[in-house]
Length: 134
Image (cartoon, rainbow, N blue to C red; front, top):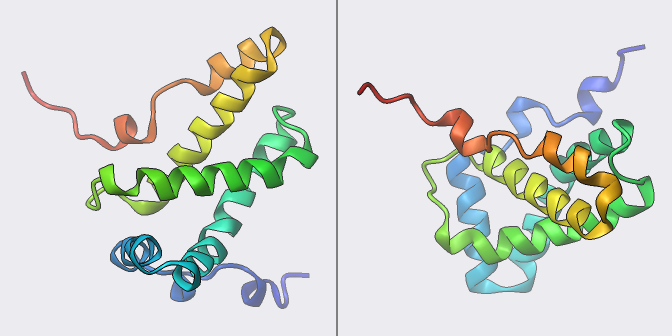
């Protein structure tokens, strides 16, 4: 059953590192269409996986995932200049996806307030910041 699985998943040897991902973002902003398409192709599987989890949890409808992926990609593109490249790229991407989801849930009305409240816990940055001694 697991045969061929390794060839279809994003194996660690195939993954771009933080520096490479940030260079790809910067290239997409500076150079345009080709780099933006490569960036989109790189981050789309990660965004789809995040939103698929939200579908399985009953927070969003499957037919909304494509729109959420596009919104998250636009947010990534717009927020790249203000981001700290020492922060892990994938954590930043998931934080953007989470924020996009919360924005969409907020626009849907009161029936999703409890879901939005549950998702509005600590951000990825808060989870990764070291605690400081007082």
